[in-house]
Amino acid sequence: MRESYPGRWWHMQDDGRLKCDLCPRDCKLHEGQRGLCFVRKRENDRMVLTTYGRSSGFCIDPVEKKPLNHFYPGSSILSFGTAGCNLACKFCQNWDISKSREMDRLQDQASPDAIASSALKLGCKSVAFTYNDPVIFAEYAMDIADACHAKGVQTVAVTAGYIHAEPRREFYAKMDAANVDLKGFTDDFYYKICGGHLQPVLDTLVYLVKETQVWTEITTQLIPGKNDSDEELRAECKWICQNLGPDVPVHFTAFHPDYKMTEIGATPAASLTRAREIGQ
Image (cartoon, rainbow, N blue to C red; front, side, top):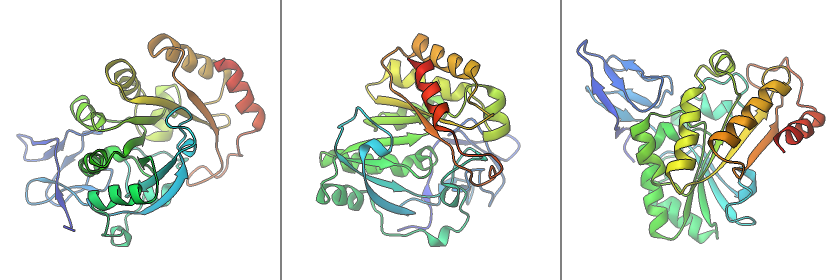
């Protein structure tokens, strides 16, 4: 595999910096610099993807683990990821992968065709781009999706949905299903805890549900005292019903102390029950 692969969705600015047009971070790079995701880099005055063909690991899972409860329920899915992320969530539960800077540890034997063939051989109905957000390796994920579809294998994006409109259209055109992490329902939470903003994620959700055939489910991880108030949960559920419809599945999941938020306790079971009752 090549060490780097030509990237898309970028342009040169008048000030000589290369601007990445993939996601709302809008990174502006001098020669040799990497974006916040760490895997997209300016190299010889072009954008390159440094993780194409490289894997941080594979696992066969039940599709419900993604979680997707209404997309080929009971089937197996081949989970796959690379490294890096375009958000900076302090509670990331896959931080050893999403924040990895040790690219030499990635395996170099994960061609699109090899992944599709492995899924077929292992009896997996689909391949999930997970562990880290596939948005940042969109070119690679799209090539894998093409290889999968050629063999009758479905593709799933497990994502935060933090992506600009043009690449969003091209990326999700290759996906059959998505689970979108709606990490909270205030911009303050996104800014202070995730290093991003809420609106781009809402835009992605509306696009997926209203303008595509991608089967979409939503996950919100409840962090005690941060995003689990009755007011915020009611606002989230109301927005989903009004903008996406009442039939979009929503998963409320438990937080456990990790990464930069080890001082907060795990989510009580009662909070999950309360969130479900609000959602109903």
